[in-house]
Length: 327
Image (cartoon, rainbow, N blue to C red):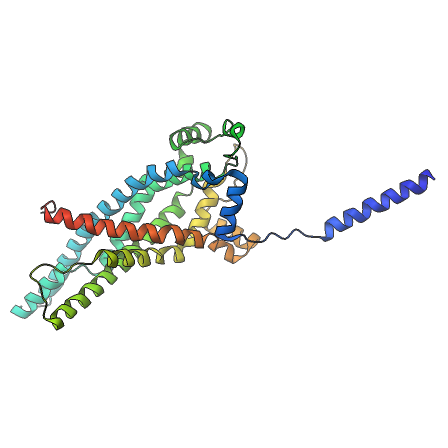
């Protein structure tokens, strides 16, 4: 009797184990809205704002460095470009006619797309080194820790509490270099972003301004003042140009996030070590499309942000020029 009972129990256990092993767990992608809903259910609505201090601590200096460095690099590169154009024209020989001189002067005042592209590239690299990488390491650490904001007892066990405390703790536990984890993919991402962003925006801006000038000439309403973009036009162009970079460089963002999120323990080899190695590991384990994970919420965040940024930049620049601050 005992033997029969034991045999039955063993058979039941074996059957349960077989059922467990033959029923693979299917993990469905939630998407941005499903993920947001799950975060709210588990941790409360305020969990959607984790890492906010790191975001606004980094966004102000990042934007300042981005536009100041872009204007500086564009002036320097534009000066080199104009000098090269003038030198090549004079070295070709022959007399310079008044029409040719007028054309050269007009070309000197307009910035070619290649100058804008490299100025944007350098400004992206500059902001990545000075601000973006340390700020995003802190932001990702704060966002990736799990605790429920609806449970006050868990709030007392938070490891990362704010951006300053997070940065100090990361440096203490892992060294100063830990704040620059993923600096290479971050530089590539920011450089690519701003190169595409500024080039697309300035190209579109020139086309819209040329269209407005032609329309004003056809209507006979040419004004003595300079033709500028309307606020809604700079808002639209900024949003559209801001969405082009992420579509191209999202794999860099995925690799950067994985490298910055992992905690390296002494004596252990990190899973994600370099840009190419990380791309190969992710593609092998999760498929190639995994390199574009998070593209939807990223576009939802970046496009409105860039739209507001360029509209504000154009409006503030116009007021500063009006008061002679750029003379």
